[in-house]
Length: 102
Image (cartoon, rainbow, N blue to C red):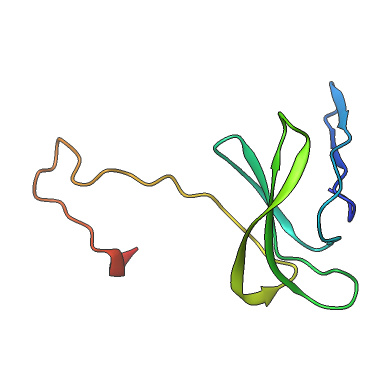
């Protein structure tokens, strides 16, 4: 992902290049995660300072839109999507998880 928002995927057997709409805020050293059909660009640097913004890309409309802001500016950031599970699982009726243990 370039500073302008251009996506490029290059697999050895199937090269694929997709030109996406530009970010609302130019950014580098950010991370990307995919969730619920959206691609999220998290944090990064705009060339002069670290960013606290998050933008999401809709591949159906080819548009980036502002998603949210983090409390802290971050560049060279790592992001991950965790699948939330329903607790307790049917096989363990006594298992419970509190929000403080996550």
